[in-house]
Length: 453
Image (cartoon, rainbow, N blue to C red; front, side, top):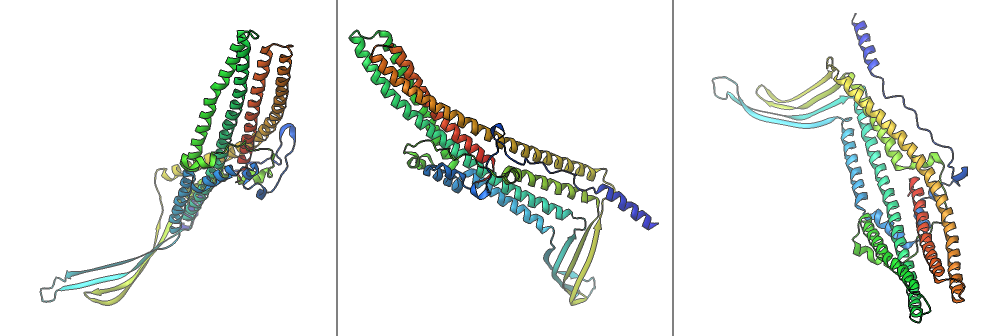
């Protein structure tokens, strides 16, 4: 009869102990495809490490070094790793015996009405206790804490990668504003020279007042753009200060020389999709988060089973009827919840729900990563095509300006045609700068999406 009851209890418990959910691994694409279904050159990971060096910009390299050395966000993420490591040590201790020392001394009345009826006594020794992890609850808690540590490490790498990419984008914004300011200043000088000539012609009666007003309008419009470019460059410099953890005056000597926008002609080269996506810090963090919640789900399920503990004491005792005697004891304990009104079931349901949430978040992270890489590939291809066309358009506009100035001197066209040609050339040159900045930023987004630095 006892065997039947025991077997029945085991069947009930085993029915409750179903383990984690049956979750499938998300699928990865076999190849990356760029625009129009073109495949992309694939390389090994080591060929993409420190990819920003391909911009060939020493100032940019220095800024990235500062970010990796002293960024507050990066140092905060590093501290979180230490926190997770401490919590893992706590989980490890639950798998090991707990050993302590104890001692006591005192005096007691034996109750005898005679001299010497008050005795002194003392006891000292070591005690130990150990939870026998039969059903793996503590091991699963350790697995969860280990996954939490790895998730913190992945988050640290994600912060580092994001900081590098944001620093590069901000630096591109800074150089773009500088270049726009330089071009606008150059155009302003040319326009002011033209304005002086038109004003002289107007005084001599050779040019109408309308030409003067139109030229002044162009000059003032160009002059008005200068403060905006200054504002953009100063704001970018301040953002770089926050990213690098350096004061603005510390960055000033590094950023002072004007320079071109970092070149982005190195072209996209990627790793195989499965390898690239498993390297992404956010995917690694999501995977470890799923592993943590799976372990916690299994740990919660193990609460259905009895817990066993082993404890013991060894020491010496002296006093009363005992003199310098060795004392010891060993005890085996067991505990099981028989009636908790659904508390354990509720914990298991909640743990499995969190496991499912972590799994869906993991799937979403993988899908988002695939989309991010493919989008970055498309962006780079189309932005590069646009930059090439804008460069040709600027060359055409510049030639048209020179031709219009020559025709105006010969009296074949009006001054309005010259102003239009000048305005078109200025706008085209500015558009080229913006396109070069957009191309560099798109390449930065692409390499960030690979999770390598």
